[in-house]
Image (cartoon, rainbow, N blue to C red; front, side):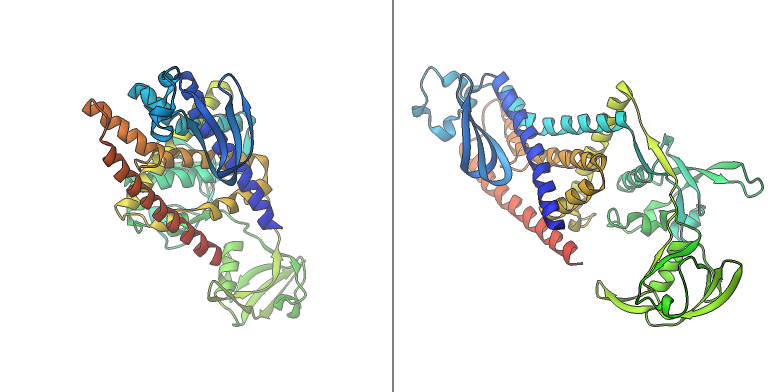
Length: 456
């Protein structure tokens, strides 16, 4: 039933975002004195509608749930001869260019305002995330820069951070900006058990491949969330090679092939890298230590053979950080987060156009539906944060200067301001056709990327 949950979460998300976007157009159009004929959620054939208000605006639900629209009194669609002289002043094209710009821009702006509102609520409510305490792979970029296992990152380039997601976000921003960020580190003092030392370490992000901005970005640096240091079996499945070797729940693994283990992640990596090959484990059971030979089973994952022991490892609660703000501080942080995310999205799109970032980062409705379902199952907080993020993405997407999108019309009207008169109709028609083709191309790439992700 996961697919059904994903579909429902996606439709709820889309319904909220489209409603807010179109309400932006509707409210500003009414404020500018333009007559609105229809407000539709969905595209295509109308399956339900009611009329309200002085203008008898039709509020409709249409058959295709992807999108929506606000239909205004417009001579280009209805024909000037079909509009009565009394209503002509309320026709869209009769409005000043600045009013038309305001009406078109209102949709994306509404999406940004929704994101600010949601983030403000989240900051005021408060939420917990895993602290920015890092696991550093040996011989990695991060290790060579001076980072070590268990370091707590408290700031980047003189900006305080608390959580793992903030760490990842700031590093992605620095990578796109082409800078090597300075990480402020708090590290346990080996000479005094209760004390810590602070230091600043520059992380050389420019040694990364230009396309490595998304996906396992931190993995390319050698950074990961700090993991359980103790490798303890909590449960062994009936077909587990470890069970067949005589191991039990509660056993603690100290070494693998006579090498001490750093943590759970290293244990998994060694097991995965040795399918069908015997491994010698040093096991502690209560006060006794002994060796056991275990051969991981072979399983194919993403067309690669990996080793599995079919055991559940005991989890320990991670170190958490509480993120919370109140009043104006919450609103300020929400606005800053919305601005940073929007700017980052535009930069990513620019890098894609210049070939500096792979087009594989374009996502479509299948990926969005998957994330909508996942976040809705985690918590209401996660789901609201997801809606805020997608609302920003929708706002950014609609501001792109592509004809048929809001940004395309804003481009037309901006040129009208510069020229002092509207663009010739034939140029707008050519732009519409080109924009429609470009939009279809982007959708095809997004669906292709979605399918590749699902398959892999």
